[in-house]
Image (cartoon, rainbow, N blue to C red; front, side, top):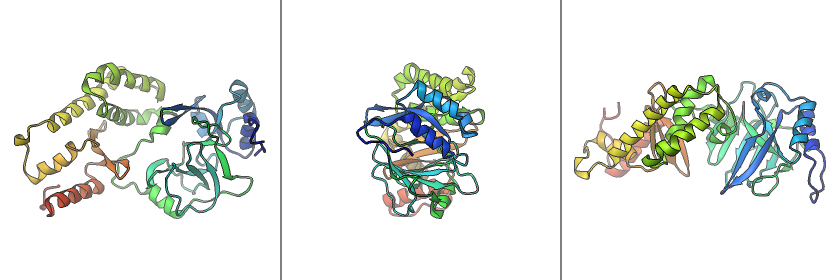
Length: 339
């Protein structure tokens, strides 16, 4: 990397070219602060740069147009980098020394060599406040400026150290998805295209999350336009309006039914064990029940200080219900209640 006087603004073109010559696929990215979050928006359609490196001419043109904008690394096999992304306050125990950067938000990026088999992006799969950026992921590189005004900086730069091998326990945990619903990495989703094969499933989760936090009177005036805008911007090609409306109406109907159950008078509640289990979910204000386009049910629940999405027939969800019932009733669930 080029050396920069800390009191001088870095030459972002020089920095970008240095990364390119290292064999990293890089793109320009805009960072801005929205409330307490830093929004990251690629300035180009970056799908093809998940498959090929940009040319030097392309990089020069990008930073000619946007000389002060940030630099993002496309992670995965192409760049030869997998990243363990630790948010501010997240644990770093067990992460072996490697190339490390400090993010503008106070977290850390641990850059490792990718394993032989491609590794996907995963959210909170290995630890609290910790994500893995694999194939098709993005991270922001130093010396980009975070929306808060802090620069990303190298703690151990790629000039100082080679990338270490991805720790085996990270590899095992990031691939241990048995019984879990696919998770949406919302930061990556907001910055990338959704391919044709994933549009329905991703739209289902997007609208489910959206309607869960909106009052019903805003579903049509806010929720539906937001879904249309998301579809037009991120789905390539966009879903047909009729198909998109079908997804919206389906999730809206289920969300309305869920809210109606929560409002049911106390005297009308089902007092069976099965009824109690249902109430554990429907009365939990953080819980979100939804189906994918195939009608397969999922639940999104608060687990510790983060949320996880599980299949309703998954082992994780059954264990959660069993524990909840035992803590409340002080006895195990009767055999056959959860079939």
